[in-house]
Each structure stands twice: as C-alpha cells, then as structure tokens.
Image (tube, rainbow, N blue to C red; front, side, top):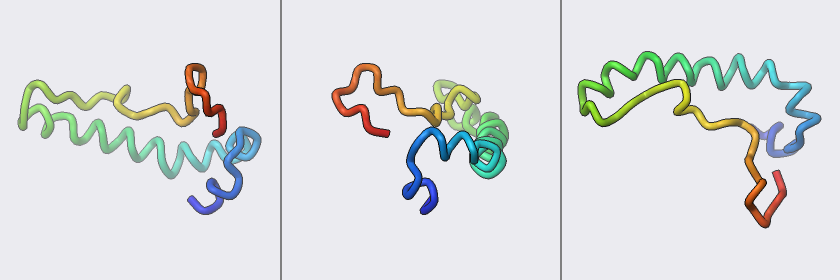
Length: 68
C-alpha cells in the first residue's frame, strides 16, 4: 500500500497490475464466491457476486476533482 500511495498513477499501476491481480483482486473474488452461500443464509436479500468488487480505476467523469 505504501508503494501505491507513493506512485498513485496509471503508469505505475500498469507496470504492477499483475501484483494487484495476484495479491488483491483474485483473493477478493475468491472470498466473495466463498461467502455468497453464507450471506444468502443470513438473508435472501443480500447478494455476493463478483460484480460486488469495485473497479480499481476511479471514475472521475462526473467529479470536479479529477485527481487519482
């Protein structure tokens, strides 16, 4: 996380994207998949789907602050 805070730009992220996928995205998706059945047992209104994981890129289209 310290590296990301220090290099918060697309160029650095593109060069390190496999690290993000291996260390963050893939484990998070596995957790969501593993937790889905338990969450449904708690309440049928709760859903855990892979789409629950937020995109890594900040959508600044409608924001005044365009910083990363």
